Image (cartoon, rainbow over all chains, first blue to last red; front, side):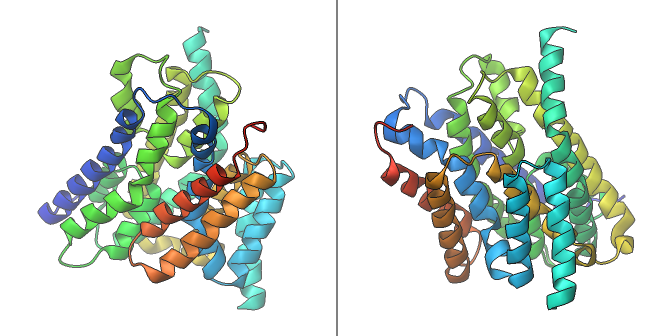
Length: 101
Length: 229
């Protein structure tokens, strides 16, 4: 088990930076009345951010990833259990890469 | 069983499918980290203290020798800036929970636990026990899986060959589907996806996450009408 000082410094830096982002949101909305258009905007944040994280992977990696993403989305919208939708995505990406690659 | 226990169990049960999907992703991250020269101790320390999957994957992309600790810190800040917005949104629903717990709750804030909390508050109030039921199993499994991944190292073979690299995207797609409320959600998602993909090409680093998120939120605000929810 080794612990390199520079790696340790990087871990501390990343951990602190990440915690700052997590905790500062608490103080951003203190005393703000959230309703109407602001509420609609905030409510849209979960899907918008999750989509932004994965968009480059599912749209610009290759056709296999894009089709697999569409299949996963179809499964999820059919209200299949979580794990089933994820398995469909993972299995279809492997098959599509074999066929298309 | 008292109500806190029930709430904790409820959260843990709901997050269970996510754990099943996230554990291979944690193993994968540990494997990649070992490939970059991190020891199992270092990999476990990072997962336990940073506890942010997307940021940790991006960090490994940036990782080289000598370790650019400043760049890694700034990158973590940028990738995780979305937490500010997530925390701001969630704080609206934390008013019934003792303030002393808020800092620890925020440490456990990840995309998945946050998404489940936001979905729950649409029907009933958020409780501390439910939130910990989501967050603590996530933390334990993520930290454990990445440590094991780093210890076992490359013996897993190529993760892409068994589609594991896609599990993260598939997990997120499944969570997004739970937020669908009609065509307006479709417009929000399209704006976010297109913006993120374009910004990723044009701007180095992780700004695409913020750009896409803000584009989606802007579209939601534009489409807002007073009669409809």
